[in-house]
Image (cartoon, rainbow, N blue to C red; front, side, top):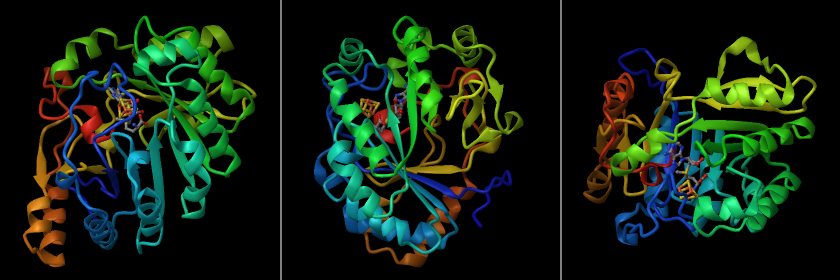
Length: 326
Ligand code: SAM
Ligand code: SF4
């Protein structure tokens, strides 16, 4: 098992398949973002090799993310490879859902069991403004297709003050009354030159829970308040699904962190909110053996920093969220 030097069991790898995206969410990237050329991204073959090595190293969970992972032509085959990799027990996908309507059934057939779909509002005009040009209908069609394909669903909403922190979160939470889904609210995190905006419009968990309790009555803690992954779960009394709060800023969960991240250009990011990185691409392209790569992965696990430094005003500078994958 891959334990880090703080005795955390690091068994979860999030893989960004591309830094490109078909939306431009205002809290994530600028409108005129430039993306990496194809040759800088790991190939499907390079990714498959790494997935096998991570499985052999004791990693049990893989999540594909982006940018927008559904833009990657080889996504379905990569999911199939991951689900068939010895050691890997869980494979997930985080997507904005725009292209999910056509992909949900093939992904399910490739062995995917669950999808995290990002959706910040159910108001079509606000959705367009938040994503700069997105069409809510396409995402709702993706959500519908995912549910019909039998994929377990979590909805992720990043909450921004003055944008979606009132009626939008209340409307999203309403989904849980009838659907067995987890609707999760994420505190907005600061990155690089967008950090001032991101911190200014942060809405913290306590405030958000008060908004939801005012609409639905007191929320019931689920699991006695223990974390489910990175989310603390509650339920509207009598609801089929649950509400999750992912609160890295106001209630850091670094002590329970179990993950590494692989960027689309082949860099292991040791903490989402710190710039410590280990570049695997020169090894992959320089003829390194499996043993050498595995040793580098083990060293990266050991070198994982304890936690983020937001309280000390240390804000990650080298990459934005879309280049890491959340
Ligand atoms: N494009 C896919 C999507 O939106 O689901 C996957 C990549 S996206 C970077 C992963 C998650 O990060 C999304 O749920 C998105 O809302 C969230 N995210 C983006 N920028 C964020 C920020 N500054 N703070 C917190 N979450 C953020
Ligand atoms: Fe794209 Fe996801 Fe970032 Fe939105 S949050 S711009 S969908 S990568």
